[in-house]
Length: 102
Image 1 (cartoon, rainbow, N blue to C red):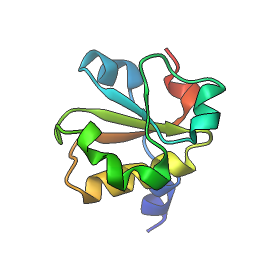
Image 2 (cartoon, one colour):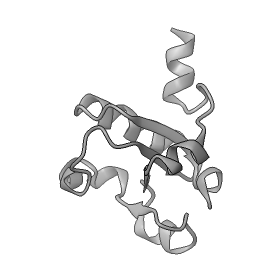
Image 3 (tube, rainbow, N blue to C red):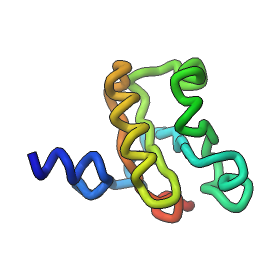
């Protein structure tokens, strides 16, 4: 139970971001447009967490690696869980966007 909670909060196993990017991963930044405008990872896609459900068409390949990120890792953990519940099989919580900044 504790490990599940840690993973949901973004404290689970470390993600090898470089390896995922080499595999063609999409970085999905789930912060607000204002936060995203203040700085983001190069090449990332901004889909705010509260609009993720309505923007799944932007992520058509459910097997392609996806790295979620936000400010601290909490929203990206929620996004990761949501995407997995929608059938996305290769989703990883990158935590803070600073972690995935290229």
